[in-house]
Length: 250
Ligand SMILES: NC(=O)c1ccc[n+]([C@@H]2O[C@H](COP(=O)([O-])OP(=O)(O)OC[C@H]3O[C@@H](n4cnc5c(N)ncnc54)[C@H](OP(=O)(O)O)[C@@H]3O)[C@@H](O)[C@H]2O)c1
Image 1 (cartoon, rainbow, N blue to C red):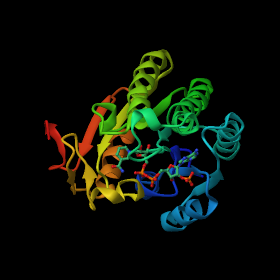
Image 2: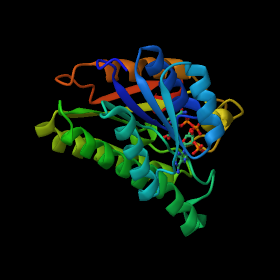
Image 3: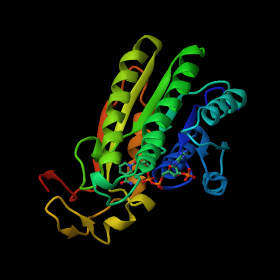
Image 4: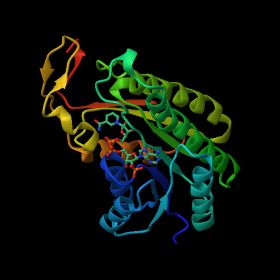
C-alpha cells in the first residue's frame, strides 16, 4: 500500500449516506474500512467501490465489537486518518412521548449516543497514539440536532447529544492534532427518509410530502471536510434539501 494513502473508518457503510461517503472516499484514493451489522450490504459497498476496502461486521453499540473493529484497522493499515461516525437509527416512528417504551428509548440511545461515543473514543486513542499524530472525526448529526419533528423525542435528544460529542472531541483533541466536525443533514434520499416523499407529520398537524436530495451531494460535502489539512476544520456543516420545511418556521 502507498504510504501516502489515507485510511478511513465509515460506520453504517452498507447503505444510504454511509455507503455514498465510503464510495466518495474510495473514489478519491482513500482506503476504507466498512462497518455495520449486516455483512451483505457492506460487501455490496465494497464491490461498488472496487478499490482497497475491508468489511468489518460490527454493532457500534457493543464495546467488544468496536474494539475489534479498530484493532482490525490498526492491524491491516497501521494508522487511522478519518472516522465518519455515521451509524444511526431513527427508532420508533410517530410514537408520542408518553407511549415510548423503555427498550425503544434505550435502543436509540445505545446506537446514536453510546455507539458514536465508543467509535469516537477508539478513533481518538488510535489518532493520539500514532506517528504522525492526529486525524479527523466527522460526526453525523442532523437537522434534528437543531429542531425536532413531532413525535421524535428519542432521535432528537440523541442528535442534540451528538453536538455535545462534537464540541468535546474538538476541544479535547486540540493537543493531539485531532480535528472534529459535524455534518447536519436534512432530507437526503435514503431508507431512513423514504416516507418523506409519501407525506410526513408537520408541527401544525398536517401531513406533507417533503423534498429530498441526492446522497451524493452529502458525500461530496463530507469528502471536502475529510480532505482539509488538520490545521483547518469545518466545525458544523448544514446540508439540506433546499426547499424542505426548516428555515422560516417551515
Ligand atoms: N437521510 C437523512 O436525510 C438524514 C438526515 C439527518 C441525519 N441522518 C443520519 O445519517 C446516518 C445514516 O442514515 P441514512 O439516512 O443513511 O439511513 P440508513 O440507510 O438507514 O443507514 C443507517 C446505517 O446505520 C447502520 N447501523 C444502524 N444501527 C447500527 C449498529 N447498532 N451498529 C452498526 N451499524 C448500525 C445500518 O447498517 P446495519 O443495519 O447493517 O447495521 C445502516 O447502514 C444516521 O446517523 C442518520 O441519523 C440522515
